[in-house]
Image 1 (cartoon, one colour):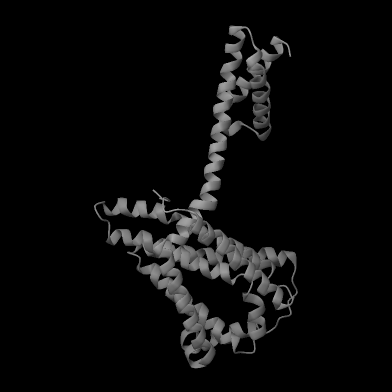
Image 2: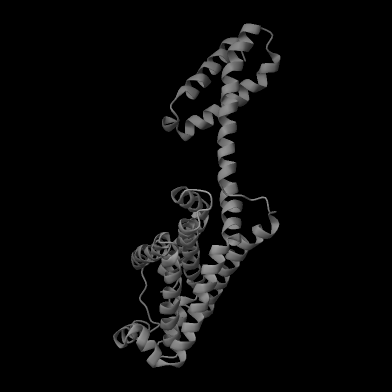
Length: 311
């Protein structure tokens, strides 16, 4: 390669690096990487000090730029696959609210299954009849359009539940505890009643695939709200506003995890729950969802030491 060609490439590299970050395209990034490799390879062979200085400057700038991009990607991957799952699993607030939700859920399920008067007192006779009729048949004419429509509806509905469980926790944590229990009782009573009704096969076919994600997300979002709200009651040596701000940042992984699980559950509920396939396949989907949560939240927590600290 001639010296003129090297200088031309160095100037081209410099022009690319001077572009505002929001105007750099994917093709620009590929060109920067290519020019950086080419010019780095020829630097040791340059004998002219002036030529070396002219080429070395943009090469160093490109090195810093590419290193920064790699660092940002590494931080994002580390947050998604280590910081987020580990902080969620180790949070005592998430554990407390998730346990509270599931205890309420299973206790209410038993009540709904064995006592219609109890179920009617919680849901009302009209609601019981409506849900029983809704799930009385396993025959469903599923279309892709119905899947997208249903997914959108479930996202809006269930994200609203998550945000309510989180947002009401700002009231000293009381709202989050209330919604963890309320949702557990309402959903548990509904499912328990339907399991002993004529809609048994229909509800079994509907709930198995998405239930692990959707139900766990409620406990996580309530835990995030409880952590943020309790900072108002127990600010320590910080101002209440500063304490809530810091605990809100520390609780953010739990809220993000809840929203992630809710989105995944909505797609399963929209596209798999309505399918007229044998329930054993839907049980398998639910089992895979449960396995995913073990591998994503629990395994990294066991492998990561105690040094993890959210600021």
